[in-house]
Image (tube, rainbow, N blue to C red; front, side, top):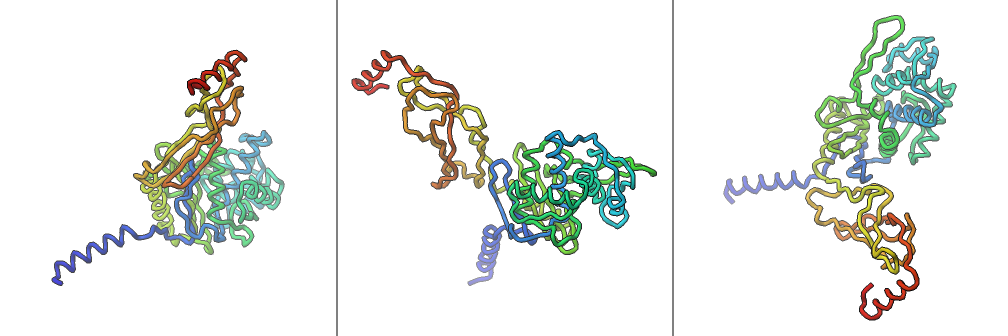
Length: 383
């Protein structure tokens, strides 16, 4: 075999190897989700226990948002800073730089937590809400269980080193998903690139957001970085591109640069290898089914939820949707009656079945009309 042929074979081998190489993120654990469909697009040791570090602060914010939603807390409420909270700002931790005795608004504490990653702000907020940080951590863990974080325990509000403050990237994903879905307005804090604290007894301090993806052209709008010596670098991140949102969580990145590079890589993988297809819009009629012995021959149907599906790029032709029902449906039909099923098939595999509901009432024909309709059917097969 001459050298030219050997060279061609080698090049072809390298190309084939590269094309078929399994996608991998250089982190100890990672996960990627298409937000609207809920589809997990990639995972690596997603249920391995991690120390979430400052990603813990996502839950700290959620507890406050829940209380604001219920009316038990307001953004304008002020909490007095304790010595315990202040000491965190003098111990080399990420800080908002609040002072003992300061009265700080809930909104400023939240921005100090979310943007500046202030551990001192976490303690001040926790003590203001629950009396002690320990009691606040109990609220955090209870909320984690409520939203399905099965392998998580919170022992503090900031994520500073504690063996009893643990989670998984899958659980951090669930928490991030809950935050974005339930609190889209407050989630905007996570996209702020800087926060200025007009501190007591000194010039204002402006600090930048530590999330490196906010400064790239990816469309990132959150969420939270983390670092502990035992865990190394971590990041819960999200991008919103043309109405499509992806959420990624990674932990155990070796360096800051690796955290930025590999998080960008996993999000880009989701964008370039998969398409999001919107199947239905909640409460909006999508089709109609036949009605028997009703004043209308058909009734429009709808789903009670938005339905999205994520599929591989250029494979939309393998996605098939059908309406299934035993029909025609006999009148009377009442609005919101369950009348049919929507079945979604991809690559000959059922990937979803959803109830379809009547969009309006259909009254029954009077006796004479029903008799006439039945005779027509018997004679002509025409319903």
